[in-house]
Image (cartoon, rainbow, N blue to C red; front, side):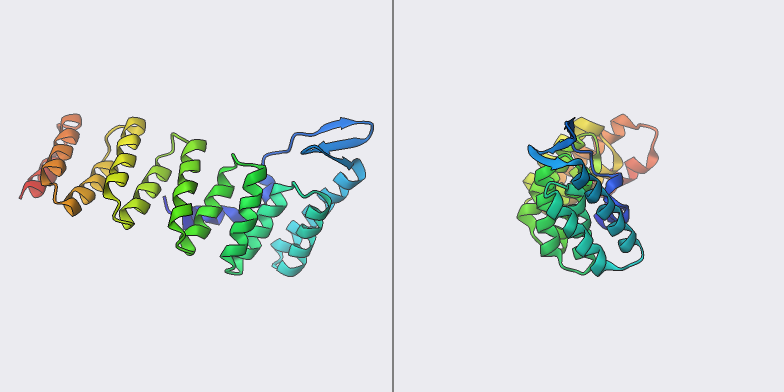
Length: 226
């Protein structure tokens, strides 16, 4: 998966992707993350949030940022406002500040896939490989059936020349999606880097067994052994 392509989705208002906080009502008081907030505060927070989104939509970033910060003054646990602030910072190429806000949003809402995708994008741009590995672990935890994150994690290892770690990720992915062209191609790239021609041939033989009528696999096998 190309995170830069997926990150286009981050321009969508956070309210469409942030999970709703659990709220309990009683005697006109809303409880958010254990902190009492009056219904008037809650209404003001919502009004400011949507006003900020409107300013962001018309490219008035400065006013939008001010309004999102006012939301957080009322409700420090508003992960959607933190996410929107992070997007504004990322749009200004302030990846470190954006990452800090995303980390705060994730602390509040750790299962939001889009927050982790945005954080991965920041770590890619700042070449923070160690933290990037952890982000992919979390994305796989949240969506274990999505192959894109396995490929991204393995590619991170590949770029670090951690070939055995990358192969371990591909082995795990095979248990999820089975043997595929993309998986075989990715593993063969590593085997050839390691000089393990026998492994590359064995992998190709495996996909031929699964697809005996595909002549192109026989050609690839011949190329692998030549």
